[in-house]
Image (tube, rainbow over the protein chains, first blue to last red):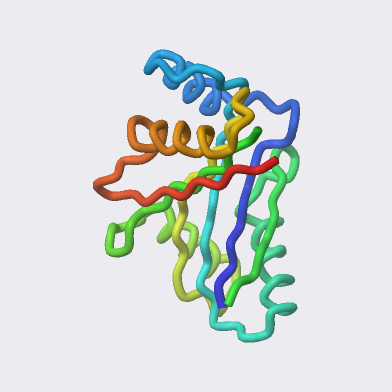
Length: 80
Length: 80
């Protein structure tokens, strides 16, 4: 089965990449953009067939490697 | 309203970042990982209140700036 993981900066953490995108959009003439935040999206293809075990496993991956939990939040979604 | 955008590499395009994550997970002892692909996740806060207009606007942003459509796919989701 597949896991879809979103890793995003916590609220209040400065996001220079998002700010850069916001400025670039303004420079290109796109109006009406209040705020931009950029995060990571990771798709993992797992051999595990039990959704609960897969979710626990992927959460452990997030804690250990994929997210810096001091400044980032993560969410895990198990699909098909 | 808010737009949630996923930018992912097209199938067949080499993803060194995903490969590096896969190797790091294996080194940490996580078994059963077949494949890892990393993409970008962008959240944009818009002043636009019409969902259809917002979607069209965000798709134009993806075409012009956020995604390299030669090697990347994008998907746009308008929320609340």
